[in-house]
Length: 180
Image (cartoon, rainbow, N blue to C red; front, side, top):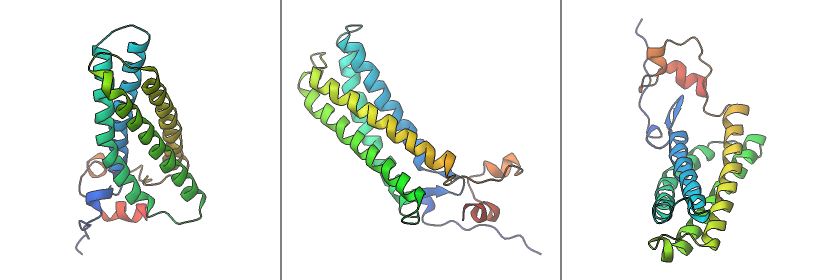
């Protein structure tokens, strides 16, 4: 009897394969960029460093905004698969709204702070928007963690699967069955 192998699917390009979603690594890059931006802004505002921190703050905001686009699109692709009206859907919707709000706040910080970042200055208003954005980012991350670690979305429970199969970029039928 021939073993059935999984077929590649179009949604693997924008959602990832079973057990290997694309959204989390993109959120990690986004969180890293925005966290660095917040730390750099704080370093400038309290006077630990000058010019370099302000430049790093603004550039990190731009990197975060660019990477946020990929995180948002892959997150939306996952969100569209959730059954409407469920607690998971409500939590995922709150996560999405928090992350969109954070992105808007970081965008406002970048736009309002652009005029003086090249002078090595993070002004008060862009700094406040950065802090508010980081607060919303933290809330959104908490909700995202709830989606994964409480509801188990996109998590496979194949604890006995050999490492070579678990790490394979080509999904096996058992992985597809475990995700559904």
